[in-house]
Image (cartoon, rainbow, N blue to C red; front, side):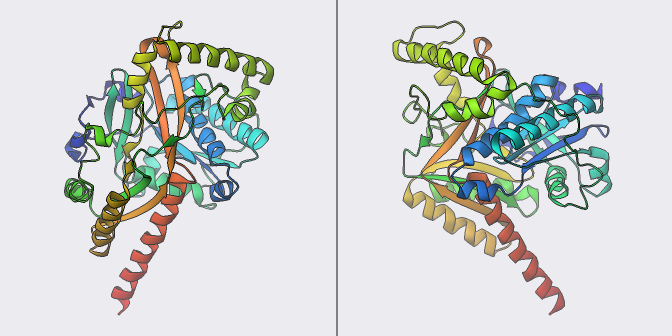
Length: 396
């Protein structure tokens, strides 16, 4: 049954097998892409509001999954937006969720969230596809990996005023969404080694991914897709929580309106008290098991994903960062890939917890000071340079 496509999709747990593209399966033709992206997110970055941007991007996923359920819907967090793919039967609740987050972004964060719903069939008619694999972070927690350039085309359509016209949603009839489980209470994750590197990388011809990963491994000394300690981004050493969290006011301002700011603030303070007590003592507090939860956070992060491009957040030394940049530049100059990169001192983490007692939680990661947004700008600059060079060769 097409509605159960993602639920029934076989999962894999060894991310090093990501380059095995035979394992990807085409999304049913009657599914829909939900696309959301914050307009002028770089301006928000320049104003020091990137955590607001991240929270709204994650809110898109939270709002949709709270309406449709978390097990049937693939999603990708993009830092300043999100992409989800849903069965056609969910068209109306999907509209409601997207409109609700756009309304919240406008009124609570003064951010313009553009939103659209694009049929997969229309993307295929333009020569692209959406093929998915389901990566299991831990039992019951999954990330969607995508190839076929359909999601990339969805982003291009979303940002093109004319192309998006048939698919764009307005805010008519919008109501605030349910954002249950969404929070941003951890402090920024400092780099343990000196550099937090946010990277977007697209091989020229997807079948070169494995060789590119080998080149990156040689450059930095570990496989970024491995399960080794070097590839772990979130560890007990860089997890920091304080009372009250520095993001408390932001959370009340951006999430509070969905249930009432005063009630939300009181609930958040009580949850923080319980969390700190459990965190310090190690004792269980309701469904919160401190040791188990902290161990799960290390696994349940999305700092490594593939949605028509490889997206990574890596904690590297100065020497590793230089070696990685040198490898990427050489591969780019050889026409093997296009990449964009942003180097920060720390990373940001936004959490979506649906059932802590049953370990159902996922944590969205982005580099500080613009992370994926800045890396995307760098990526498109190089892409345009490649296109101009190709045009010169063709006309020369």
